[in-house]
Length: 259
Image 1 (cartoon, rainbow, N blue to C red):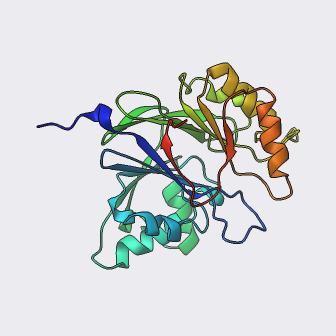
Image 2: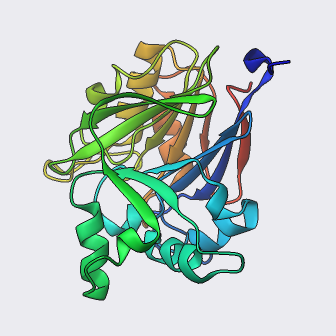
Image 3: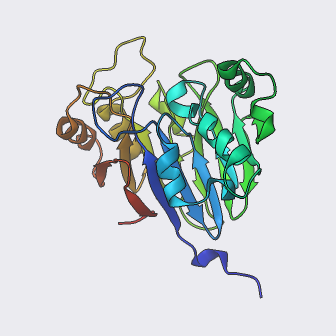
C-alpha cells in the first residue's frame, strides 16, 4: 500500500544560522535541514555546520544539498562532508549537491587538487526551475546578491512549504516563490536597518513588508550580523507584518507551517 503523502509535515532543523563573522560562541554558518516522508534535503552548509548536521542524521543519507551561492559561509563545510563521505566509517559513499556553476572548482582549489570534489560529491550546476527530491519539490529562483545566487522554496506534495532567501539584496526577488501560508526563512543581515546601498542584503522592515504582502504564515529570521540588536530586528520586522516572527538559532526545530 502506498504511503499517504498528505499525512506528512515538513520539519525544519536549524543546523547553522550565522553570517560570515560572529562573536557568538557555538555559532555556525548558514545551514538548514528539511525532512518529510523519509526525504532529507539540506539548504547550504556554511562554516562549522557539519558537526551539528552529523548529530541530526548520517550525512550520507541526504537526498540532496542545495547551495544558494558561492560565499564560504554558505558552502565551505562541504569540505568536511567530502572527507566524511570518503573516509568515514562504513564509507565511501556519495551525496548529490546542486549549486551555482563553479562550485566544484572552488572546492578543488581549496586543496589544489583537481578531482577532490568529484571523489565523493555529485555536483550539478543549478538553474532556475522546479525539481523533485523524494517526497519534496524544490523550486529555485535567482536573486540579487552575487552574479549567481539563488533562493529556494521546498514544499511537500500538498500544503504550504518553506521559502529560504539565501542571501538576497532585493526582497521583491523572493515574492515569486512565496505562496499564501508558506513559512519565510529570511536573512536579515542588517537588523533593523537600513542596509548600505552596496551590501546586497536585507533588513527587518524589508522582510516584514514582503511577508505581509505575500501572506506568509510565519517569518523566521536568520543570518543577523554581529553588532545588530536582536530585539530591535524583530520589532522592525513586526512593523509591517502582523504574523509571528522569530530569530532562529542553531538547534531550533520546527514543524511547518506551524502556529
